[in-house]
Each structure stands twice: as structure tokens, then as C-alpha cells.
Length: 441
Image 1 (cartoon, rainbow, N blue to C red):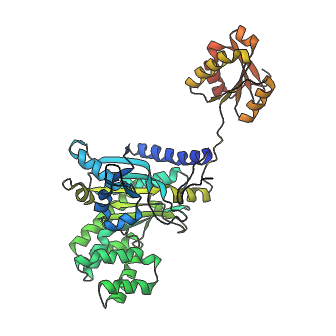
Image 2 (tube, one colour):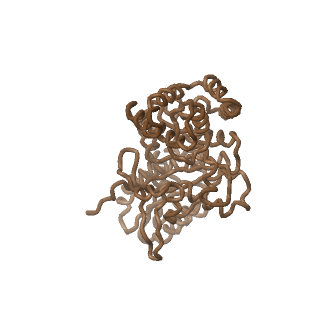
Image 3 (tube, helix red, strand yellow):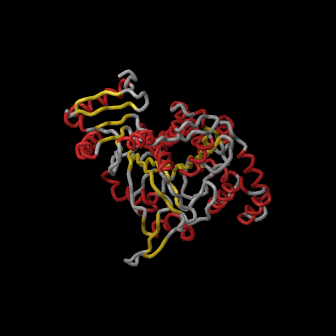
């Protein structure tokens, strides 16, 4: 007996229906924000991912040599693909570019709760606009998705931070430009490490200053109110004041978008990936438990790095389906879909051709219809109709066929009416509006 590979999942109909419910919310909210859906291959040149993340990414990928002797990999994320696509069309695309995708991704990592080797992501990106309005639009989209899924202020929070604020801070305490990325990596991991481990990591970068830097880092991380943050930024000179104005403008935009209640200033969020250049954020359950539900930020120079010649400001985020599904399930927000047909056909063996023709017409009209695939008695068909969960049964016997009629039986009320076959669709649509057939019929 074969089983699924480690880190991969089956989606039987019930689970697939729940997944598709989440995807529908993604699409509906993205459409409300005027984002356009795109798609791309799941197989890309291996070098595309190496160029973005460095050679160390290879150990985390499903990669191989194809029959054309090309080094290829299953995509672990979509940003490099997006950069490739946009760079090839940049001159012809109207700006800003607001695109989203829902697709499967692959990472060869140790499977654990909330993380698999195959997973789905919603990716939304806004390119060609460098104002804080673009950052706010993306954050509002993320919050809109969570709200539409039923998550309120008690269920999730978006923790907002800023790479530029951190770089200004590091400059203010005398950290050389070449050492700042390494310091940010330590800060990014600091919540998951003991203080002494963080101090040791900082000491390796700047010998003798580990404890001092850690103390100052912890002091900055304690700031969680806008007023306090603005005062701190103002102490960094004119550049700091400019960034303070950006923070104020972003928060004003988020208030106008009506998502301020979900926003928490949390400078412990750094997002370790070096390509982030501005505001960054992660969405978590309000309790703080579990992995991030979503994450993203501004990455203004990545398109040029991956394309070589096209420089576009860019920002975006991704929502992973595994942590989101776990969160929705825990909060009782995953609907249980009852997948049943609208109609079940019951007909005699001599009437099967006419019956199947009625089924075909009814399906074309948008109804879900089931029918027996082999001959059986009327009694057995009635039992099957009851088990199917259908609301209506269409009954076609010898008498109905001769008169070119069909009976509609309401399996809920047991009411029954006979209609001309030519008027069946109109009658079914009318019953949908009226709520069924009265039991006295």
C-alpha cells in the first residue's frame, strides 16, 4: 500500500472544499482591492533561486537535472518568478502593478506542524509605487482577508516594524554599514534564543560589544507606541525625522483603511531576508502562539537584482495555507461543506434516454444533478435519492414520458407537482425562489 510522501498532503473532497473556501476568500478580497490574478510555472531554473537567496538555498529545494541537462527546481516561493515575469514586460505594463497568485510551492525541509514540503501560498505584490500608500494598501488587503475569514481583533494581530528604522538605529550606535545585515540577522532570531546566545552572536560580529549592543537593541524593541517611536527617530537627525514622517503617514493611511485595531508596532519583527528595504510585518494569532500566518514588506531593489536592468520599487506579502488553516480550525471558522446534488433523477429503464436528456438540460441550467448509472427498481432509486441529500427528485415513468411531463418531488416536504418537460427549468428556478413545494401539493 502506497502512502503520501513526508510533508505532502491529500485533499479528499471535504478538505478540498475547505481549501477552496479559503481560496475563494483570497480571490474575492483581492478583486475588491483591484489586484489581478496571474500564474506561472512551478518549475524554474535553479539559478533563479540561487541568485535571490544564495547557494545555501539549494539544500532546501527539490532540484534535479531535466532531460535537457538543465538544472531546475520546484519553486519554493514566487518572488523570483514574479521578478522574471515583470522584468520581461516592464515597459508595457501600466503602473502600479497589482498582481496576486494562489499556487503550490515546495521546500525540502523537515516536516513539522504548520510547515510541510508542499504548501499553498497567497502572494500579493504591488510594484512601481514607492509611497507608503502602497505599503498601506497591501497591509489593508492582508487584514481584509483575515477579517473576511472571520478572524477579529481577538484572533489575529499584524506586527509592524521597519528595516530603515533599524538601520538608522545601528548607524546611531556606531555599527559600520558592512556589519548591519549580520546584526539584523541576529535580531531577527533573537526571540527564539536565550540572551546569552544573542550576546555571543553579536560578539562574533563586533568583538567586545555583544552585551552593550544587545542592551540597546532590547531597549529599542520595547518601543510599541507611535509617539515614543517618533521621538526616538527624531533623535537620529534629519534622516530619522524623514522616516518619522513616513511612519506617521503610514499609520494615518492604515487608520483610513479601518485596519488600525489590528496593527501592533513591534520592532522585534525584522524579517531576516536581506532584500527587505523598508516597512516589514508579520501576522500572528493574537495569543502569540504558533507560526506566523503571513509576512511581507518592501523590497525595492530585488527586481533589479534578479532582472539585471529593471529597477522598480516593490512590496508584497504571502499567506501560507497550513498555518492559516490550523488557525481557522482552532477558532471554529472552517465551514463544514455538505456536498450534495440539487436534484436526483428517478426513472424507468425504458425512459432512461429521455431522463438523461432531462439531466443534461438541467445541468446546463446550472443545477447539480445525480442519476442512477445502471438500471434499478423505482424503490431502490427512491432510497438512493433520499441518501443523496438532494432537495428534489425528478420522477419520469411511462405515464410522464407519454404526456411529456416530469414530476418534481420535494424530498424535504414530500410535496409533489407535475410539469411539462419544456417548462422544467423555469419551474425549478421558481421553486428556488419560493423555497420548495408545499406538502399539500
